[in-house]
Length: 148
Ligand SMILES: [Zn+2]
Figure 1 (cartoon, rainbow, N blue to C red):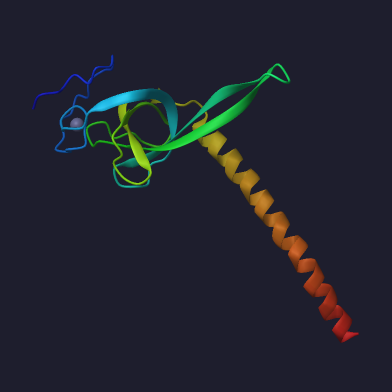
Figure 2 (cartoon, rainbow, N blue to C red):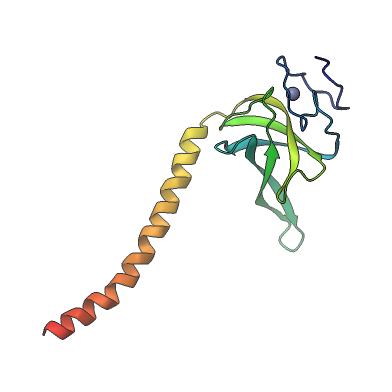
């Protein structure tokens, strides 16, 4: 099968695929913005969640703040990016309500990806654990009041 030139300097996938929404083997055209990010969720069928960090300059404070962007991107089976992969994504026509990008290249693995995800999970759990405790306090007290 012929592998198309997508108009971007990327290493072409070695495998072929039958996906019509593949920029290399299908009819999908890529245009617009190109980003490099990490796959943070690859559990969906042929869709990955890609996240990257960028800096936003705040003129008032003359400093940069860290910002994160997350988009869904189509994952053709010839590329088959997994969680923790650093990928290059390119804008294409909207493929679904929330999907308007396609993975065009896997650049490698993010170092310490598992640790980063674990740390983020841990901080989430802490935040969630705090809330119910605060909520529990008041009903327990009132129950004690009734018993007394
Ligand atoms: Zn393909």
